[in-house]
Length: 133
Ligand SMILES: [Zn+2]
Image 1 (spheres, rainbow, N blue to C red):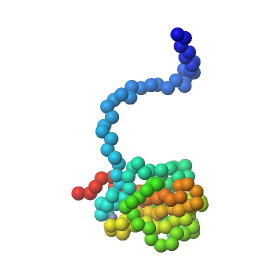
Image 2 (cartoon, rainbow, N blue to C red):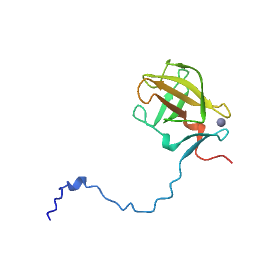
Image 3 (spheres, protein in one colour):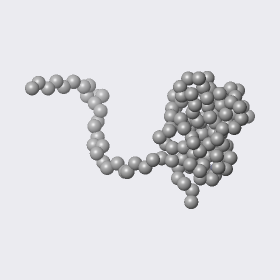
Image 4 (cartoon, rainbow, N blue to C red):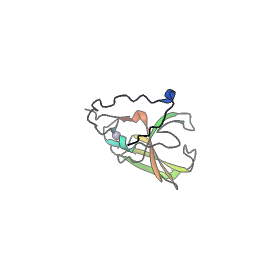
């Protein structure tokens, strides 16, 4: 039997490290409201929008927000009519979203006509990754 091996450029050889190290049992990442501890979203719902999962934006009054994008955020509730003013994501209207338990503003829901039709940009500092005691 003839084995054909593709010659690779040694400089681009990928060092195949032994990755068999035992992976810790994967626990689903959950993100909670930093104020009241309500479950807001999960790590598996992280998405990339406009080239990144993380974004830093200024609002028209100069406040800076560091945001993470998610395709789902069952722990928040939208408020107010969608607006396209000063939108951070081209083609999307936004609506403020609050924690469904404590009403703290968590970020924004974005709605557009192209996929994904809806996604959430949540403020990093309003989320914690463990349930408060
Ligand atoms: Zn809350």
